[in-house]
Amino acid sequence: MILWELKKIFKCKTGLIVFALFIFICGVMSFLKPTLETENPYRNDQYELVEDTRPKKEIADEKFNEKIKQIEQMANTYVNDNSINKIIVISRDHLRFMKCKEYKDVDFYKAMDHRVDHPFMSILMVIIFVLIFSNIYTDERVSGVDNIILSSKNKLKALYSKLALAIILPIVIYGLYLAMAFLVTVLQYGMPVNGGLEAFRIVDAGIFLKHAFTINGYLLLKIGTMTLVFMSIAVFSSFFSFISTNSLASISATLIFIGFGKVCTLIKFLPNSLLNIVTKGNYVDLLFYPDRFVGMYAGDVLILGKSLDLINLCNGILIGMIFIGVGISIFTFKKILTK
Image (cartoon, rainbow, N blue to C red; front, side):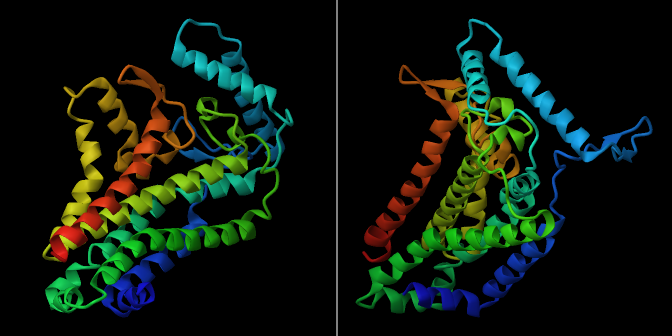
């Protein structure tokens, strides 16, 4: 059933658009380049972009020493504030677990980190998933094929295969993108080295990392987080397709779902705990500013008298959204579509 659904998707115009968008993402990937640790462009008095012509090693050493200086200053700070104290503890962990207190080549990982969750890529990925899953059932409803499906013995199997595709396909498509990103990055910067070193080497705001991650660990966390984001959007996009009468209504509902959390951040009379959650965990900011979310410490929130890490809570909600989307889709199958 899943293979049949795939064939149906890629035989129609939507499949061609999706394929073209994916090729486009892979084509422009090589141009998505970060400022490396060995580079230091700056603006002069005339606001012209000027390249730092010093030796690369000198630039990299200066940047690395500045990061170490910031971490050491934070580690040696003593204040009576729980949030800041956690950052202080993390800074001390950075210093305690540091394997090498000098600059090492991390160009590959810096570029890969930039490409794993680049906002341009993320938006195009969301467009791909919305195009696929907002039409996964509405097209059949418009064409009348849904009556054939719902009258067959395998109606639930057919519906479940559509839902399963909403979970599997984001992993596959994003995985293919990551594979292409890996190959392109290897061609441009060479094979990855020093992935077991500290993640703050490739993170601009590394002092706010919530753990002493290794580079490899941090990238895996970022990939996992983006996968959850794409999966949850795909699952809800398919759910809106199941309950909508046409693709326009389904796409509109999906876009409202994506933007709802961001709109809630403008409602200032919400409880502070809820406002903090939607400010950090809304889909718009997750797609445009993932570096503010993934692996970072953003303070705690008080929920039912318990102090919880804000980012951990948002991650839990993100995972929960997938289960909610799956649950309400199954409810729709059993209580509405096949009733």
